[in-house]
Length: 190
Image 1 (cartoon, one colour):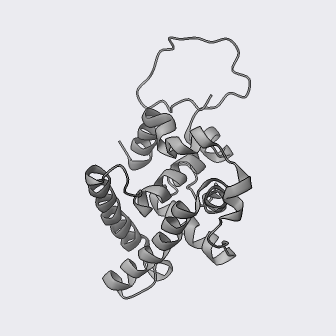
Image 2: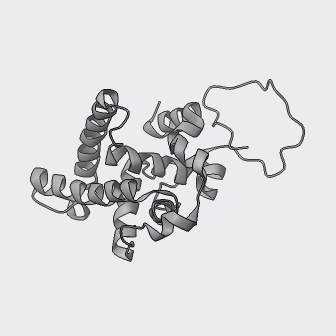
């Protein structure tokens, strides 16, 4: 099983929890949260987020997260749906990834190789899992978990993710509860 298949299956198994339950319970209310925006994203930030997302879901036999425009998706979600606390965690996390890259490789994240990016984000993912397993309910989420959740949500709800990484039928027809599965089949987006 390759990494893309594993991510696809995890995203489908976790369903709504991947995006964070508060996102679905509160919805995207642009009223108070828009006013509470910590800062705005630049084109450079979007390119940076695209590279982070593309390291999480790289191009293989299907296009990666950068091709799906996940960086721009993340900016909309953070600005419109996250409260000021989570926005600050997200923005600080963008800086922390860059600082971790400088500490480990002596270069900004954007200047290191794809293999170095993968190694760095793998370490951050392990750190986030440990943090989330040991955190108290009142503690904030780990910044990398926020980024990874948005990457998965953005990719698998994009046209590319739904039609090329998953199976998609625009008008699915009747519901069939039991369809034979063949090993290697992609999961359904519809």
